[in-house]
Image (cartoon, rainbow, N blue to C red; front, side):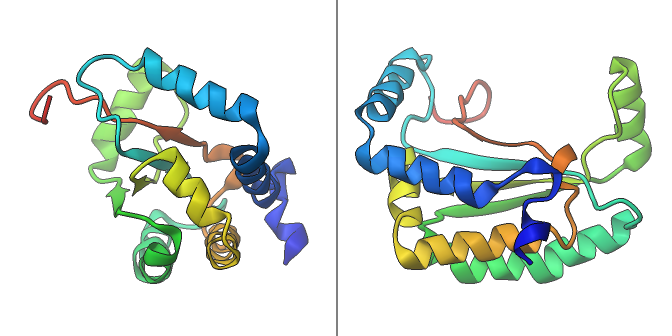
Length: 172
């Protein structure tokens, strides 16, 4: 199972452990977080951060099978682990209107659209890292990352942390 987890040269578990270590022990990491907070534009929601996974399905897997697994298997796993991980909100952005999405992608000359985007929210980067640094949180995160190999094409599914900036329709 461990070898499959490192598919595509990725070792998410090691990266998460390094981020937790840097959070706990690295003054440079803390300084970088503080520096980034100063650069956020007015109107940004400074309290909530989110982890986003732009997912493409495993080669050979139909979109229908991907969405079924994601919604019926992985989603409930994430919900069960949400409190342990300190997740405040979990949103599955499911791809719909495939023809329109493909046409939009073609206007930019991009690859196929994503099959979905997971959005997981925490109160702050510090809150996320504090939960991940506990034995229970580390185990819960590992279980979710390991489950990704059952339906996500790792090398073609970017993952990143962001902050929302409400420009229309949100609290300013």
